[in-house]
Length: 204
Image (tube, rainbow, N blue to C red; front, side, top):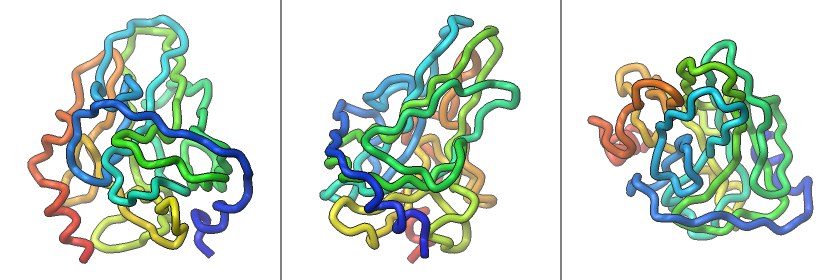
């Protein structure tokens, strides 16, 4: 039984999503941003202690929203994430930074759906990179490469792949860095050489 499906009935409170005017206009995308509106993925906060970043889905193709989601978040070695805070009443079948999350109630559709806030501990001005990747045992094990995924709000069995807002290497499936603090900005949002529409065709 897929973890993402098993989790969807385990909690019981209503939640809400967050909507803003985001940069990436492609459907079914995921990224990490320094704002909850999914506009910026780079900041220069220096060394100021806790700093929040936001794992966001943009332009979900499921009009019913999100009843579960899965991915992993890779963080620069030696950097501590002080807290992983889920949006909604959520159960994670894995241990951070790996996530297979089921929600008590769907997050309703909005152009930007904040899935989680990660509070990064910034105690030096060194560069911190965060990268969204598929979780270790993806629910959609399609070839050629696994991807993050989510379940539609009205049907936990309706699983949909998520593309990377900062793109990937189509030869290896390796995603580009999603968000950078105190360093060179990552790839532009929604401006990958390989369009997400083209990538989706690989999975048909």
